[in-house]
Length: 237
Image (cartoon, rainbow, N blue to C red; front, side):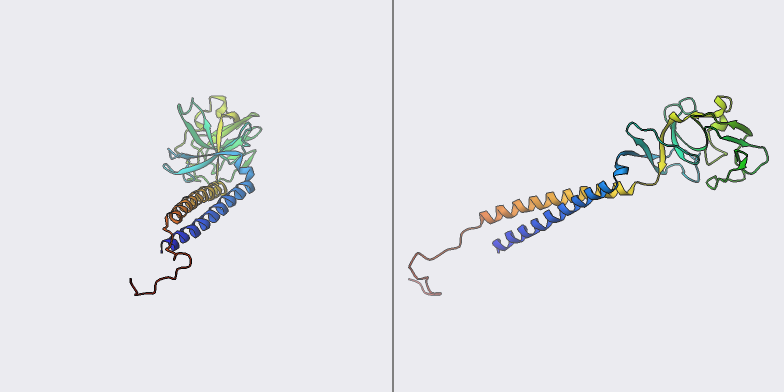
């Protein structure tokens, strides 16, 4: 029975080693197929305020692309971004939405139900209360290399409309620290496969060592002396 137990351990050790190797290999292949993502630094941030409701509420967790090393993020209209603006929010990053970029004219005329971008009504399905596109009127032409930011909760947002006397409320694109993205599931799956595979492979290695030790400790079965017949069952001297 001891021999069988040792053999079973050995078989299970081989199964675990093979399974672990397959999982690690699968995770590596999955990561290689997502090579474009692997070069990007992703961070998960907890949302602290309600200025971006309904897109993000206080307490929500959001994933952000912090960009690849040595490269600037490509920010477009409608993107949700993390920006560093010490004069607006000291000691932390601010979450807001880019509604206009360099060369754009963004305006709000009192009594109108939508902002105007380059003279045309701007469709903003993400705004919490679409009847309140802004709390103050403004007319700003955004300089090149800068952007105009607004929160989705227009009635409760510290954004460009609250700082119109400072560069018309615009900020440099260099203030962006991260861009909101969907959860990077490819990288999470690849990392999970590699981690689980490594654990399974390690368990297989430990079990293999245990099986080898058990086999070596088994007592040798008794064998009759050379040429001497084995005693018959039930017969004694």
